[in-house]
Length: 310
Ligand code: ATP
Ligand code: MN
Ligand code: MN
Image (cartoon, rainbow, N blue to C red; front, side):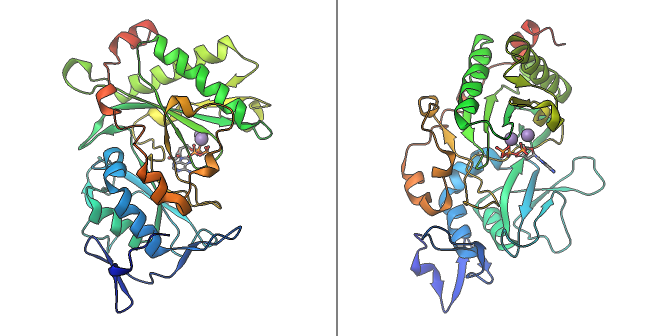
């Protein structure tokens, strides 16, 4: 891994002004001849990927999966500020009992690494405005036993439906088993929709896709309804719901990254495991397939009307 040696002085590692304690702690074990990935490696990755990560994470409430002893130790989701929370993280009042945390800059990402934060799961809201959705996520979850080609076919079907509604879906790997389609929507003035409309729209679209190919898709959360199908999980779209951020690592074996793809990569042969923390310098050298994400946002209102959601 390309951990800049110059950052290590007297055995101490500092990233974006944040001291990283136990920099050599192994977070992901080595595998298949690849070296272990340490806490310092994670901090350096966050620093290098900061601009691309922050485009999708900054100033939204974020749930963080922490694994202070690495992925083989205990892992937990953190949503709220905790006593001793790093001052580099912002607190956001979301009318819950305690404030939620948000990352606003590279120092915040370094603080996440320092606390053993391996995954970032933001709300789908507008930066600085937790009450306003600005994207819709379709989380495609294949039944066990399906191949990844089935997920690819499902993603293309969902894409076609969304494009027919005048929307511009983007696609990413999850670092896990499925794919996410994410639709940027305008969140200003008369384009603004509520969380309930956002979720009702995602549900209506998912059910329409299922109705067209009930042998391939299900919209039922229960695992037993999945039998050989892809579950279109539209539940990522309500207030407080999260999805893993593009460029977030995953606290799973294989050290996958949720990687933003271009649609021409979504074809047989695509292997999500290729996008991982061992190869991050190479991944960041490529042009960002999602650089046009925000500019591709359109108002959801015409599509809401077409789907009969009000
Ligand atoms: P995969 O491709 O393996 O399904 P995924 O990230 O899509 O990876 P899911 O289990 O489908 O994993 O979950 C989708 C999203 O829902 C997650 O990215 C996460 O943000 C959110 N989520 C899932 N489970 C929880 C949970 N227990 N608590 C909070 N958020 C969750
Ligand atoms: Mn999923
Ligand atoms: Mn899911």
